[in-house]
Image (tube, rainbow, N blue to C red):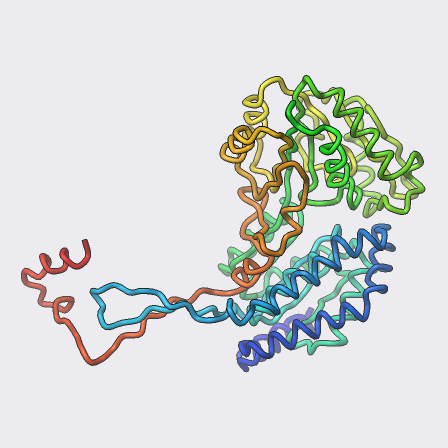
Amino acid sequence: MENINQILKEQKDFFYSDLTKNIDFRIKTLKKLKNIIKENEEEIMIALNKDLKKSSFESFATEIGMVYDEINLHLKNLKTWAKKEKIKTSLVYFPSKGYIYKEPYGVVLIIGPFNYPFQLIISPLIGAISAGNCSIIKPSENSPNTALLLEKLINSNFDKSYITVINPLGGKETISYLLDLKFDYIFFTGSIKVGKIIMEKASKNLIPVTLELGGKSPCIVDNTANIALAAKRIVWGKFINAGQTCVAPDYILVESTVKEKLLIALKEEIIKQFGSNIKDSPDFPRLVNLDAINRLKGYLNDGDVFFGGDVCDKDLYIEPTLLINIKDNSSVMKDEIFGPILPIIEFCNLNDAIKFIREKEKPLALYYFSEDKKLIEKVLSKVSSGGATINDTIIHVASSKLPFGGVGLSGIGNYHGKASFDTFSHSKSIVKRGTLLEFPFRFAPYNDRIHLLKRFMK
């Protein structure tokens, strides 16, 4: 662990050399990162396949391609984002000019998850580089092939005093040690449970944090929805990465009059997308480890299986499963599922569906399938969530032009695109005064100048 302390010291020293504040240096680094990824695309996809059995298509679409999009947006806009902003100041302090300087925090700690082990490390790293920070990275040890590849790609191409991957296969002990160090910023993606620990640890040194967490993201389907299209888009969003997606639809609330129609459409769509023998489909990934399998198997007893339910421990496989007749107070409706099990609950009145969601913690994402514009606005205004997509799933996360983050227990802060630059930047307020003129009324003795002050400040 002494090595980590030394690297942190070297990064702080490098940061105070002020090289990272140079915009051309940041742009050069982003271009270098992009070239490294381009040169190693195949190796990245192989690692993702070994860890989670992701297809090349899914690996590129949800990991590599999103990173390219993010880098390109930063390269295009960084000079504009980094400019100081001119702000009007009060007449009381005339003559003066106000500015906001975008200042990097310093050395940031990025802790990534196992489910998108490449994209969810590199995306925040892009923001950290763009804003002018140094970075220490801790990938998830539960995706060992990708973690070791990240170590190789980063540590062989960047000086450790600038960007480095620390102990990629280290577990809780490594993270606990890192959290006791005085970083300038911590960016974490993972579970609510670990997020609470990180926030508690960070609070001891008053370190600002971004926590990208999760929760139970609801999906509402009402009787005006295009059921066939809704089923297609729900199946895609729920079962991509075998359901191991923080913004995956966690459960469906369907209007009772279209429940049977939706169930049949979902079943047909699962078979259409993954075939009749899903276990042999090259497009259906696997769970991360046996612990995940054992946790998820317990949920299968919380209702009746309408479709799916097949489990193979050895292959880390759970079939896409539709669960109905959910038991009261069942675990599947308390915990974030994070796997290919989809509970389906009916409602008679939209207000009941809204009430059901609002009685739970605020979700990371909200999905609503409807053709009624007034009802869509009603749901959006009454249900608080980190983000939302109407008549589709997940795609609000895929846009680098939209900030992504949670609210309440689903997370703190956001990123993607300019939001990433802002997240890793401190906005420093500056007032520059002129010296040719000074009004005496703000200096003691004040006498009866309060009337003049009120005239100015009211």
